[in-house]
Image (tube, rainbow, N blue to C red; front, side, top):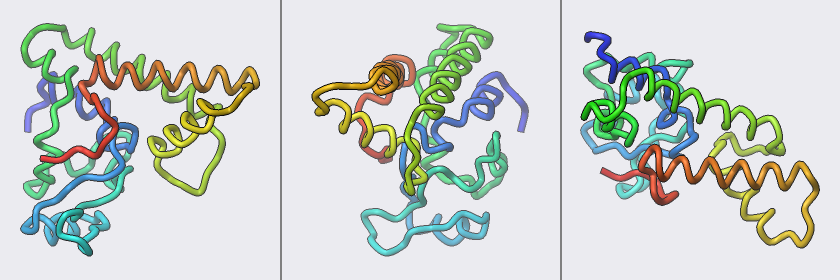
Length: 171
């Protein structure tokens, strides 16, 4: 596989792999065994929810199975708005990378003030905390900051990445 700007962008970003955009990935029945052989823990119990949880175990600051012939179809199929804009020459590669860097920095800022939890999913922890803070009568300064940054991040997910609802991606 060549390292096209689109491939470089995806491998540098990883928001759809790291659990920041989605909490799970749907798999089709024929993909279950091959994906499991790649080292991903597959959920098979319910035919409507076959897949694997995010963050993906194959995301290690880059996707280590990106070039595999068994790379999941849902992963191949998802193209965020930044990627589509890059492919359409609507933005340059440096502009796309700057957008990714900016959102990754905001995520780091949120992670630094997001309370700990047994839940591994950043996305689920962030949404749960946002919902808790939105009904709290008075917020402490760090809570106001967290709520503000969370709202900004969710807006960026919508307007920069095209994830307009926080439901799991389905193909």
